[in-house]
View 1 (cartoon, helix red, strand yellow):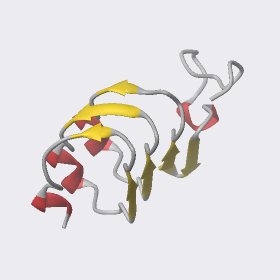
View 2: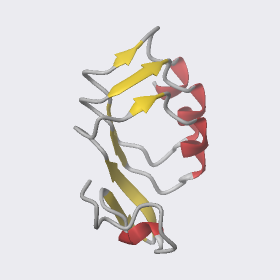
View 3: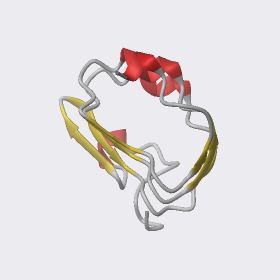
Length: 92
């Protein structure tokens, strides 16, 4: 994400780099961004989310079971992080 990508501004999230909208947020593409920490369970509130791409970062911990609430989710890309445990059954 470039420095002019509107993150941490008052700009609507649909204008942020790595975010694609179609009514609501439909795609988050933050791969290869050096993200660290855990995957926030609050992502469960993005009801229109179809793709979540967080691959090639330094995310750790487990995949939140709450992501199973994303009924529109079609693609979940998390490879090449430091995630532990198995894929939650809620996502299957």
